[in-house]
Image: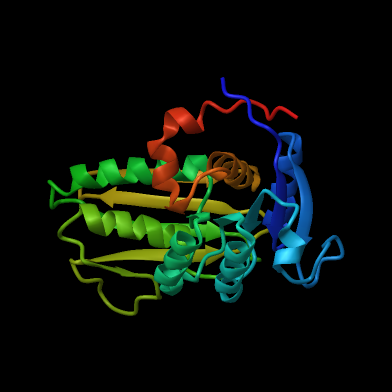
Length: 263
């Protein structure tokens, strides 16, 4: 089992996820030495800059989509590796990748850091490959999130939809909005529901006239998402380049070998 030193972690965005990341990081022996948030009373700084990050080893960003590019630039100038958990910024992916590679830092992004959700992606991909062989099976999806979720569909729903389209050739489009018509054979309807305080559920069903196969991921709390982000930070600490969760999972022997941090 590999032992690794504790990290000084900077968190950008101190909402529900930021708070849970702090809790999990400290349980694993790390120190959250910087909290950047323009509103939170627990924040150490309202803005991110090179001076504010100088004593941090790595940065975890769960802020807002419109702040991601500037946060990446600040981390690049500070030579600090960065985890991006914010969604909705993906049209800037090329620019973020360029900054990461040119500055020599490590950046890993994901729409969802839950280890369980990322295993769910792989289960869906395998199931979709099988369903691709049998035209009798139609496909639908639904996601349920808490009442504070700001985007719909979520980044996770979009990733699941992408996996389905890549593996089921007769499906070429995903409809997220309300349908006031008959759905076309090439379409998948992936609906969204928002409500309640702590809801994280994704459902995909492969449905034929005679039976259905329904695959569900249901998270009980934010802990799995936060733990995944910290495990990724431990893996990314000394790496350079532009990564996603596939890179983390493809190095599973490395990623799962971590024990408790050694102070």
